[in-house]
Amino acid sequence: MARKIVKRTVVTGGIIFLLAGLCLAEISLAQQRPASPVSAGVAQQSPASERRDPCSASASSPGNPAEARAAAWTCLRDGLSNKDTDHRVQAVYALGTLGVQSDIVPMIEARLQDKDSLVRQAAAKILGDLQASQSIPNLHTALDDKSAAVSYTAAQALWHMGDQSGTSILAQVLAGERGVSPGLIHTEWHDMHEQLHNPTSLAEFSAVEAAGAFLGPAGFGLAAIEELARDKTAGARAASATMLGSGTDSGDRKILEQALNDKSWLVRAAAAEALGHAGDQSDIDKLLPMMDKGRPAVRYKAAAAIVRLTAQ
Image (cartoon, rainbow, N blue to C red; front, side, top):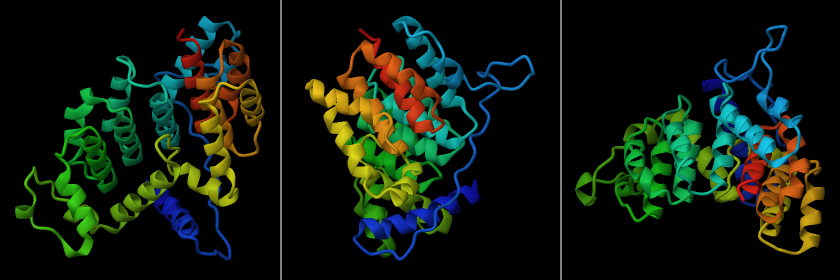
């Protein structure tokens, strides 16, 4: 895990300068990691005892709404238990697009206990974005997470819901090297000193916050940083897809359908999510193949879109 954080941090450092408006002579991109096999508890067994990808298997399912919905849920649940961190992160973000629902919030809350801090941070962020007030007790616990990024994100999530329990964390982050005395904080004190002076924790904290600030509420996590360095207009195209998803014009919908084949996976994922809002059940057959496109963000955003379109 340490090596993964270092790799992410190197690429993130470059994009932070890019976002600040500085010219970069060159950007070194880390090679894409091969997808990890899915967890044994969810994956199906092939005749040769090889593990199959439930999302790929689901993509070949017949396209009637009930079967498509079941296939999409299979894909999303597998994403949450996948051994690969990015799969779990992207599955959390995808579930967040479905809104506050009694069966969805507990699935996201459970990821606050994930072994990987990036997944815990994604869960805290999404619960805050959803204004999931029922998750406040779990977010209180997350304030004392060993990861600075998770603690800070939990504090932000609570603050957005009118709960100031994480005030001391926000104050310590703002004070930085100056430090802040517990006596100056009139709410519960959460000591961030060790996390904010640990190089690895601080690097992770800076990376996820930079990514979150640029990519907005929907989020794609650190995986998007490499893509934005490779394709500098992908962020704008993805944002455009998101905005078109709130429109009602049939021409906008046609553009979104075309964007499902965009060269950037970031745009394809955003277009799939947007169709979940702007489309109807006639779009299911277009979204089903997206669950077999390799990139976690694409497959899980497409799966969530199918769940949304079949909710009527």
